[in-house]
Image (cartoon, rainbow, N blue to C red; front, side, top):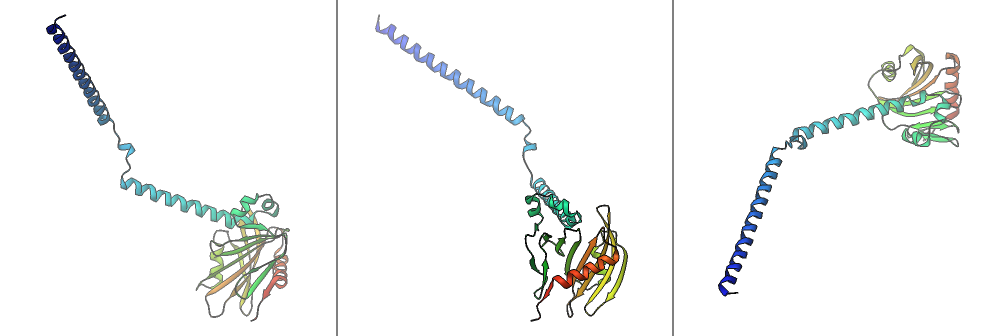
Length: 242
């Protein structure tokens, strides 16, 4: 074979390779352009969150959290309107979530820096640090005791009515006015049940501060619940006179 023939074959091979590469590059370029065109045709706006939308979602989330917390507080404050057996059937997790425990022994709790209240064993006790409800107590005989305290410039009557504004308060009557306290009888409705109630309300001299001991029962008469209220406080309030 002549050198001239070999040279031509070499040249043709090189030309073939170059042309093939050119076609490959052109094909890849066309594919990239088509892919870019497809991407540009896709509406990505639903997947992009604007600042306005982000702020709106954050505000809605904040509102949802507030609603959930309000509902939890409502259930918590109404929990002791369940009867003793119903409370006893709640799981430990549920009791802990509402700050409730069943006392295994007599327990002293502080009402203020000078006053302690003894809670007998087997009673349910709820420590509530959310609002004006200091503690709630449930006896095995379904006597419910609430202790509220807060600062107010309102009268005793108006303050008590405010406490019971969601309880369909009826038959409100001031029974006695003592040195630093007032006693009132009343009736409320909760969880489709009627409760007779008797409250002893202490007002701190020199401060706009009131403490309410409320005794409520679905079974005790007005006279019996009055006697139970005074008996409980006489037997269980411990006063430090120092």
